[in-house]
Image: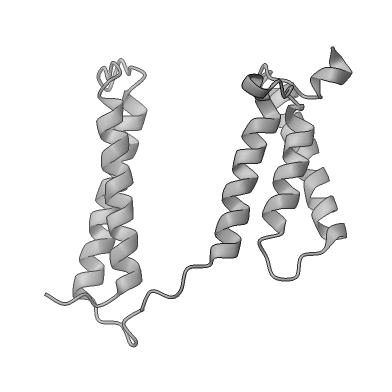
Length: 162
């Protein structure tokens, strides 16, 4: 059996792997039933659905012929580094790192850092555009998560709010 599209085949395997991992991890929680859902019900169904989507994509990659075979290109190391780093920095700034006595910097600072670091992944990023995007994301996140949903997490740095 020949692989007709390497990109789709790899993506399908990834979806099946992640979906199976989510479904398996969800079984450690009380799943419940359709009318009385437990905390593991949604992740289990999401994992099963993701694995099914992966199976369909993998099947398509093995059956449907493409023009050039959709070869997998080189890894884009620079964007990969910036995107992963942006998420790690966001998590550290949002909650702080008690083991090294780094205080929580809060939601607003974390969103600005996330946006600026992730924006550096693109080839010709502009400071002004990134600043506008970061401001829109910070205001939107504050309105949705803090005001509308009333989630309890630090919004401003600890050394400012006390």
